[in-house]
Every structure is written in C-alpha cells, then in structure tokens.
Image 1 (cartoon, protein in one colour):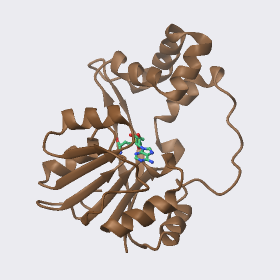
Image 2 (image 1 turned 180 degrees about the vertical axis):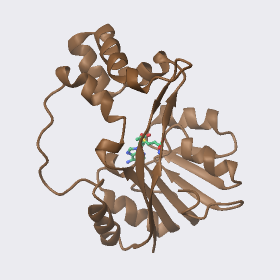
Image 3 (image 1 turned 180 degrees about the horizontal axis):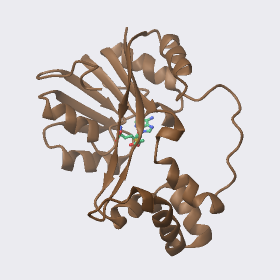
Image 4 (image 1 turned 60 degrees about the vertical axis):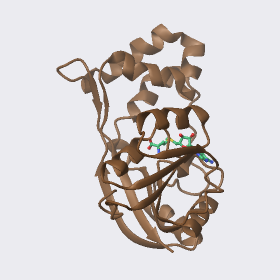
Length: 222
Ligand SMILES: C[S@@+](CC[C@H](N)C(=O)[O-])C[C@H]1O[C@@H](n2cnc3c(N)ncnc32)[C@H](O)[C@@H]1O
C-alpha cells in the first residue's frame, strides 16, 4: 500500500481510523510525517505509545483535520463507519490522494476462522441482503466514484497477522464483540479451547500463530 500510494520521506499522511498505529508505524519508518485519527480513545493512546514519531488525536473520520495532506489512508476503516461515501468525500477534501483497504475474498482470509470457531455460540449469519459489501471490488469503485474521486491504482496484498503465543491470539478476541458474545454464552475457557483447536493449523514451530490474509488496496485521486 505504501508503494502503491508513493509514500516516502517527507510525505504528509493522514491515517484515518489509525487503530493501534500499525500503518502509521510503517509510514513513519519510510520517513513520512503522519497524523493518526481514531474515534477510540484507547486506540489513540496505544498508537501514541507505539509510534512516538507520529502525532495522534481522537476524532471522527467523517470530519477529518483540514490538512492538507498528500495522502489520506483508510486502512480497514470503511466497513466500520456510518457513511463510507461521506468519509471518502471528506478524505478527498483534505488529501491529494486517498488510499483504502478492504478484506479480500473471505476464503483467502484466515481471520474467518475466529467466526467459524465461535459459530455455535453466535447468531446464525444472515444471508446477504442490500447492496454488495465493500469487499466487492466493483462496489468499492462505485462508492469511490460517488465520493467524487477517481480510481487510480488497485492491488491485492498479503497481510499476515502474527501472534507470539496463544494468549496474544485469544486475548484480543475475548475483548472483541464476537468474543464477548460467545464468552457470555459459553464461558471464556470454552471460547479459548474452541479457538485454539480451530487455529491449530495456523500454529508455528515456536508456539506462535500466523493467520494469512489478503487485503484489497485502492488508491484514488480527486
Ligand atoms: C479494524 S480497525 C483498523 C485499525 C487500523 N487502521 C489498522 O489497520 O490496524 C478500525 C478502526 O477504525 C476506528 N473507527 C471506526 N469508526 C470511526 C470513525 N467514524 N472515526 C474514526 N475512527 C473510527 C475504530 O476505532 C478502529 O480503531
């Protein structure tokens, strides 16, 4: 994504929905000047601790800081916001280019195993209704166009998630929405057991875990 968006030394980057600062850290490592914004106070605190070379603040992606920025990045953000078109339009107002990622095909994303492991304790998945999800490349292109942006480059990238041990794998899951819902029905011990059994195939020789995922990347300009 950094290559596709041309991020290098001195590039000004707004990282919308920065989470714990993973993308910000990679951009800073290239010498970019990064401001990260997230609606979650604890994510902003974690990012500030993890990436001292960038600035972070609490904010809403629908109302980004004025910038201007050379790049606005929205890494795995759009599926979480109330109005993805409004977020993209606002990003285009403050950034010369806008880079977004979404999940790739479900069968190429190992993170689906979390949902599969907990399926017995979660409500059944509803058959899809309404417009296609943003993971559909045609749908993503459409909303980028609706936001007044022009699609530039598109690509797919491998995005492995690595965990040093079982606690690092299960801990964040138990803090997530599906983890809390399953634990409320089955208890944390049963959730842990089910997840470790399902993800045994993802275990590394050193006792960690690697989940291989594919992200779609799209870079647009205004
Ligand atoms: C799936 S996480 C992605 C985090 C980060 N970009 C990454 O790839 O690690 C989505 C993030 O978007 C944030 N978020 C969701 N809606 C938001 C909004 N309207 N404004 C700002 N941040 C938002 C969440 O708090 C969360 O940190």
